[in-house]
Image (tube, rainbow, N blue to C red; front, side):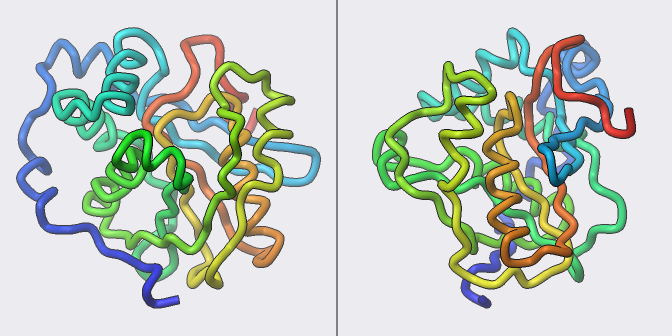
Length: 217
């Protein structure tokens, strides 16, 4: 269990206070969004997103993920500073859980985008990272699938390799569309730790007026 917990490295420190976006861009993009909810017939969890998945941020994310563009990463770092932090979580009772990638995707990209964003969030919140969940190498990619197809595609993709060490698990992804990936991760955790409080966090989700339901409605 111990080997699966990581603390954010010090190299994120120079970006903590340095402005990474101009005032205009910050006002356009970094507006605080409502808390959304991901649910199925049995469970639900809150989703905290930094910004909407709209142009130009949609392009920023694509360039970062597909071309490892560092300038795009700086924009995403800026957005992650303003994502809501779930109430009541700390280093004593919570871990950040990056959405795992597969060996195939890691070879294709050469890096793990979600882990990079999670390390920065770990530095900001001072909450350790836990990588005790793995993903089967599913050949079907989520892009372009409907919500029902996405849910079916990832339903059994995730499994725990270590016991969860805390009462809270904060699942992190770069983009959340239907919430199917985070829900599949959450169900894998709940299958072995049924009382765990699970929260979802992402950089980008939905569009203004087209998104998951708002929490509490």
